Image 1: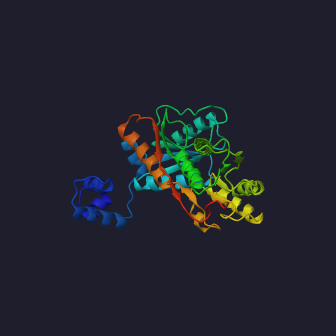
Image 2 (image 1 turned 180 degrees about the vertical axis):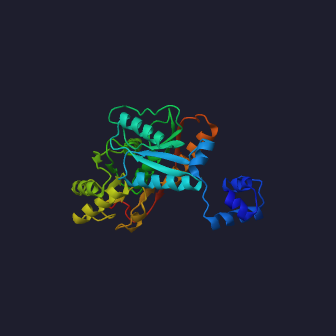
Image 3 (image 1 turned 60 degrees about the vertical axis):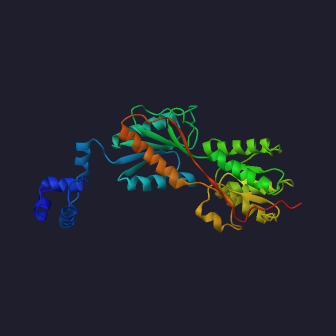
Length: 329
């Protein structure tokens, strides 16, 4: 810092103010100091800054899975938003969804010196009805049912599922079959519940639920079964990847989409517009979920107190493409 000050012709205090982004420095002086920093290859000592300020400019992220599209998109959005606020992200995957593993993850993140934690908790714990997070840590939870006890950000899963079912009913289909996600998933549970509730509210028959595991392969296996259901004219798949496998199975069985069976997905992954036919789906705003998670946990840190608990729902929207159409009588 002394070398930078000497080269720029300013005091070490001015260099400190520039490197920390503090006001009170003219633009000409700031440019002069930054030019000296570049010439000398100066980088502020982040470890010393953390000790001095008591913050590490790092957010911890705990997640149970890196294999699902939703988690990957949410994690990407969290990392992007954190970087925009000047924070790095430390990721800690948890192999087994148990309370002990969650506690261990928080302990490890404490050793890694993070300022706050975002938990992407998309599935139920195996050994507890609800998750319990350590006290004294600023936490925001994504995709969970812990809204009464913690700050939660989630997609409006139920609203999106209702829109999907109503879209198919409005096209004249007598009922809608559902290819659901895995039983332990919060998102799958909410989408399945909204599917059945919407059918009952419309006075329609509720077909047997068909279960998948989010993968295209499970959608393919389900599609082979649904292709043999003579009364199946419309299917709501709980994610786009299962819908992809479903489309392949229906094609192989000679069931045309949407002439014979309409198919709608959920997520609006970038590839869904390139399916054959292009997939009608429910768009999730993963970027907004990530932004709200980061902003929520930063607000908690700035307030140095627990913010209000509860769930913030990010709206979905229906994206109409060519895989859904009127029922042929």
